[in-house]
Image 1 (spheres, rainbow, N blue to C red):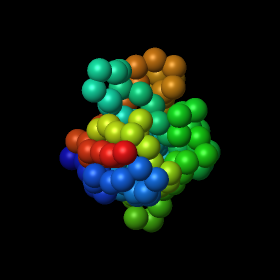
Image 2: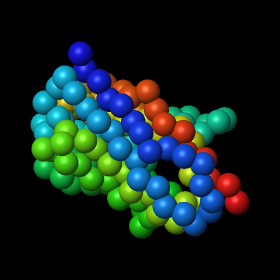
Image 3: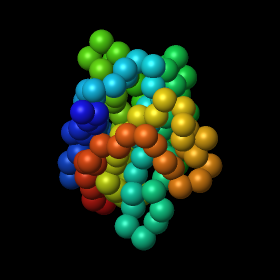
Length: 126
């Protein structure tokens, strides 16, 4: 029923840009907190960027100034614009949705969420 499908991941060179998309269905998208998370081999799942139902965004210090999270409520789609990519950005990127149940874990602990996508791989080669 609930689905989150990421797309846009690719293998790119350092300094390039990439835009990830997360198409959703089966839940009231506009009322949910949305976020992008990434898993780097050998590291814990981490919060990358989040956006509230009202459009307030927050970023990891690692991506602040380079990444931009946005959403289109009409298209029920979440986006992550990634600029100035570097090797440290190499990871599996996941989108997630939460009404408010687990948002307290975002940026503070290993993030949890009500709904998760399957992930899309981003590889940045130097």
